[in-house]
Each structure stands twice: as structure tokens, then as C-alpha cells.
Image (tube, rainbow, N blue to C red; front, side):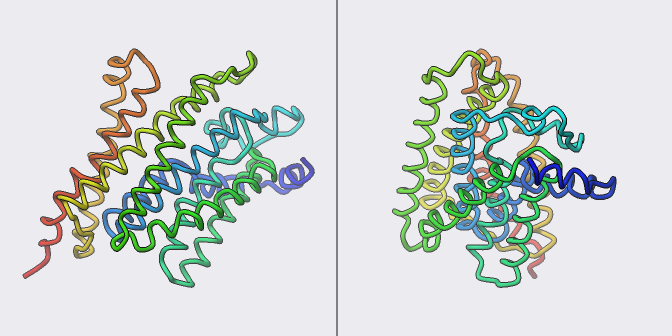
Length: 305
């Protein structure tokens, strides 16, 4: 807590706002947008890589949170204060830092995939800055952040070989997706069947259950998307810059609308069970990986004489 108290002592209104913005770089919204832009416009291979690193990191993160059940810094020490703007998303247990791990998916994966020194330096700096921001705003300890930095680094380097030459070795992709599905199913079984103590944080448990089904269905969706694309769709990412912008803006608008509209009816269909969360993300993955890419030939023709 010494470092957190030291950071608390240097807070200013300007730094609070700045770090409040920086910390969002590890949020779900940034991850979704970044992965979609890369997947649709730059490199399918890197897009799959980013999503696998992100989803695998979520499994590990949620498992560790539920296993160790370490409270947030201000819960452990009531005298410690946090930047209030960060409180809304800092729910549940503290260890390890989910935002720091997400930052590895958003910045670490493309830094490893694209062999550009300047890009790597910038992205590594953004990962470090995101990790620092989680401590500055007071929602994570150095241990929370440090373990996430280690886990994120391992995932980026271990998963990379499976996607480096995926066009030449598609079997490797099926192997990593198969492992991914098994781990996700094991995590679902753990959350559903493990005898947690009575004092477990209900909100964190509910979040873990939702994420467990979300990751499982996303893993299945990614494998199905890869199979259908390699066999039938064969979409390409190339288009002129303004067509890329239209493709991303319209596609993301439909995707986010779909994600929002499906929530209530699926919850009603499955009686409020967390499996509804998984099915919703499964449909979103299929839209992002199969349905919308079917329009890319049209966007590729725009701007051509």
C-alpha cells in the first residue's frame, strides 16, 4: 500500500482526468473496437491473434479473481481513497488487473505481430501507462498489476506462433482454438460446480459466471468463423481509406446495436441464466467474422475506376 499512498499524495485534478482516460485503454470497448478494426481492415491473422489473447487472458483473470478473492485496496484499507471516476468499473475482486491484461490484447498482440520498431515502442509504452494508471486511480495494487503484466507477456509470446503463419498452417489454428474451447469449458465447470465460500462477493461471482459462458461461446464462434471463412467466404481486408472508414463505422454500429438488442430477449429465453450472455456474444462473433465480411467485396470496389 506504500506505493498507492505515494501516488495518492501526488494526485491533481488534471492527472486524475488524464489517468481516468488512460485507464480506459484496457476496457472492453477499446478491445472490441481495436480487434474489429484490425480484423476488418489490416490483418485477419492479427485480429484472430488479438481476440485469442484477450479471451484467454479473461479466463485466467477471472479464475484468479474467484480463486484468491482479494478485495480492492480501499476495502482492505478504509483510509485509502481512490479517484472516484474509476469506481464504477472497479467492481468485484482486485487480483489480478483485468484492464492491464486487456491492454496486452489491444497493444501487445499487434506489437508482436507487426514487425515495426516504432509501433512496438509506442504500444509497450501504452501497456505500461495503462498498468500505471490502474495504480494511480487506486483500484489495483502493484501485485495485481505485476501478475497481469507477467500473464499478458506469456500469452502474447505463447499464442503468437499459432497465428504467425496461419495461412500456411491452418491446423495450428484449430489446435489453439481447440485448447481454448477446452479451457473455457473447464472454467464454466469450475464456476458452476465449485463449492465457493458463503461470503464470496456476489457481484464478482455473477461476473465470473457471465464471462465464463461468454468466453466459451466466443471460442466456439471463433473456430466456426475461421472454418467458414477459410472454406467459403475468403474475405480480404483491402479497400481505399475512406471505404475502410465507412466499413468500420457502419459495421460497428450494426454490431453494437445487435449486441444491445439481443440482450433482453435472450435473457428472457434462457430464464436469466448466464448462458444467454454467451449466446449473445456467439451471434456477435458470427456477425463480425462471417456476415459483415461478406460485404467487403463491395467496399473493395469503391474508389476504383
